[in-house]
Length: 531
Image (tube, rainbow, N blue to C red; front, side, top):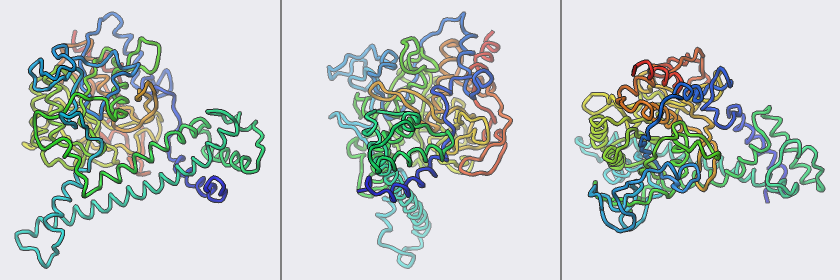
């Protein structure tokens, strides 16, 4: 057994330390709301923003969250969930005639009328490769026709990308399992020996083990903390253990489904482009719940977290399984949000290929015509999206660029060379602004809270600022909100690591504005422009 194999524990200890050392320095919960000058963390200066608004009365504003789902009973969100007052719950009737039966609190575009929902799905790359494989799987360069040559070369390109990506996830699974096994061998025995659910470093140092095995585990635990020079607390390592099971499960599911050439989750939903789905918006809701809390968690209930714009009314729309979303679901989700009164749509998802982009483009244009702002996370592949596609995209097939779109990269709480998140996509043309997106504390299902990182978190920070502006300045158009947020963003006179590398580059070379959003500056500019 691994828990009795000290040599293996020490080997795993070295591996774990190497991965932990790459993490940013710990920051306080809610750092993204703080003010750099006052608090020392490069957040959005939310308190200062609200001081400028103290003599104004906010209006509720509907914010659509296209995502994996929402825990509608969460203590910090349940009073902020959108309600379709024209629909009667549970009567199996489309009371308001909008084409959706019992859509009292949003809609699930990854489900069917029987109440079933899609949990996992393949990647778009896998789906495309599978189609090519049906055509060319038994052929080679000697047996293809001249007419097939171009498509055959495309097939070979997808084959290489697919196999490389699948191998990467297999390696990630192996590493995650090794770390999970190691933590399982280390943390539970110490918790049991101390008879605690958690313990501080001081408590562990004072503890006197009764066996040599526990003594060695204690020494290993302390060595991990020493190795990380205060960047990892004892409690933080315990939290890492408690989340290791879910992390391993997610990696396992992604490997099982995202790259499966046999699995077709779409059979649950069907191939129809309209009139599908169901009203269940709550399943597999961790990602969407975290995103929603950043935007609009209740701030006057003395519990949990503080949303950026607590007057937000969150409209949950499910379109994102564990895998790549379908273009038709993205398009229909945007249209549903627009038709039901959303002023801003947050989209914290993305993929490399968009075979039905024309459907999404038409929906983006529809939102633009109807005065709805779209905010999108730039992606987590540390890639320059000036040169590599990231969908959905404001660049439309007709060559125009959507005017109602903000593309967002992610920053950390460290105002130094690690200011830009190592995972964040970037681009002087492709990314508009940066926003806090590392270790963002927000709501999680079952009345829980926790930190998550990604441009998925940076996007709702911008959405929250947009919602704040629209609550107090409802006359603003999407283009005006976009302009205010981008024009008021603040410079960072820093050289930072280009995401995914150690190469130093000026921060202002990584996005169109070269800046990071700030709620205080946005409100100040809105006040000036609406006099």
